[in-house]
Length: 147
Image 1: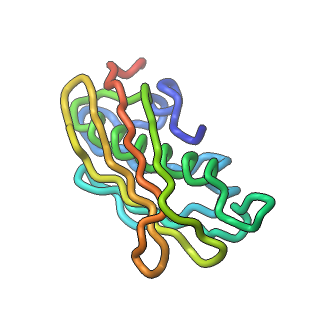
Image 2: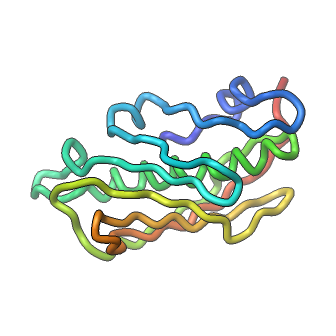
């Protein structure tokens, strides 16, 4: 998936307790993901539906999960970087509420729990009208960075 591996995140993280800055992976770029906002409190990205549809012309559920996991993982790594740590995903679940055929979706990750060992984020995927398309919950394990 598009979440950074522990080694990748460790290689791209700043020293000490500087906030980690999001770097798109290959899949993120292919899916057309754009970063809108990045902080410990909130990570927001957008993605076009076009190019991410399944054979019935709807936004692919797997695309929703991939982008949702990426945004939630980025949020966890940003939080982890404040402690000189990195994060790896240990659980993700999603509920699809409605479909989309066109336009752009917005993906927003906000923390449910920001601990020193685990983080949990809610990730909302909405359409241009603000309607909820998908809700994800992702839990990440915070780990010491490998230098």
